[in-house]
Image 1 (cartoon, rainbow, N blue to C red):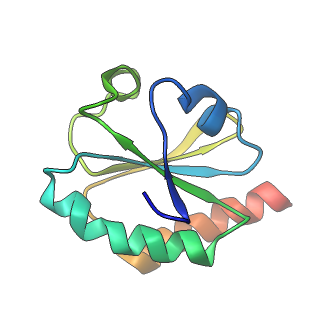
Image 2 (image 1 turned 120 degrees about the horizontal axis):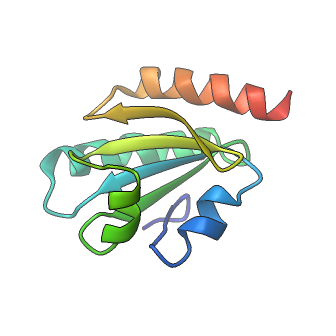
Length: 113
């Protein structure tokens, strides 16, 4: 993916997302999804901004159907923020950078408090 946005799979989702010490924002996406590609630069910028406080990862729904089914992903992009192994927030569709940053600030603050 990139230096700041990593890829997760069905195989490592449990350890890399649910077992993470920090909040993790998961982007459920697919390469053929135009809105997913539009969201990628925003997620990259947020990953740099929140480096160390929140991890941002991507999960390809076509290659990882088990995790996608487990979380009831019906449309993409879907962003789910996990903290301590629990889903805390979900955004379906393309969201603006500031609204996502606000969500991450709220959760990153809760994680460090």
